[in-house]
Image (cartoon, rainbow, N blue to C red; front, side, top):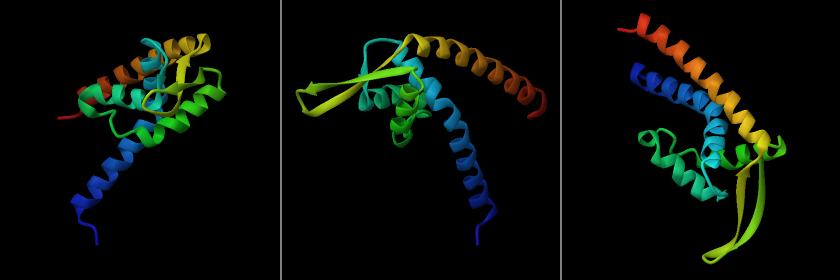
Length: 124
């Protein structure tokens, strides 16, 4: 039988997973908008460097989201040889991806600001 603490931890993990699902695509576009094409592991390591590790550990969700963004025309990819092993698939943001990033970032900021206003007004 779960204790209240176990249930609370499980609820927090569920909340974090649901929250993460909506932010992975946004953060992937932002990372790829900042420079040269990158392969999956580079993207994952870049995400780990930000936000005190809050974005770390999302590597399992990374590749399906990259594929979905590519199918949507927001990213393109190419395979290039690697000096350190098998060929790597590199991703880069498209023009449509840059436009989506602008729109999604604005929506994120508006949502964040609204949630912060509610929390600041109601949370001790």
